[in-house]
Length: 122
Image (cartoon, rainbow, N blue to C red; front, side):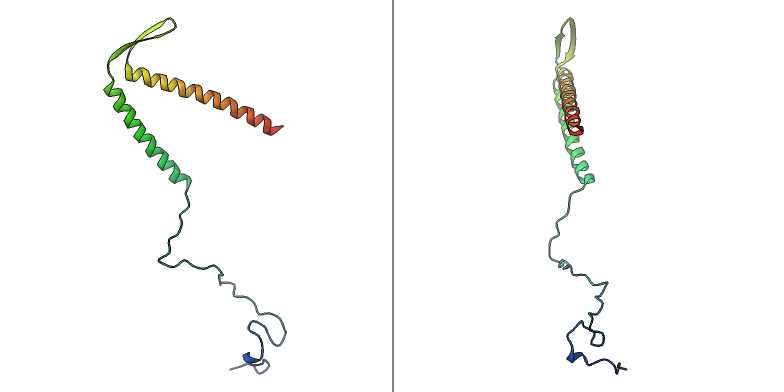
């Protein structure tokens, strides 16, 4: 059944209501976005979880290399620091030196970060 008060569709532009002269309501559920075809490759965004997983994997590999290094360098050496004299396997001594160096780096980096935060607050 057709509405006798409306003009036929061929007499007016699509999307216009001929009686009121206003545009018809747009389709709310319609999307103007083009959906990707099945064969198109979609770019996957990185995430914090993915970055953390990669970092942990790299850290684990470095830890394995460090353990192998320590196990291969078991010769005892005498280490002297000021008045202290200690006998350590060379691998353990190098590990301790690396840890002390990393701690110094963290302290200096933390001091610089605090400096920058003070400047930003001013």
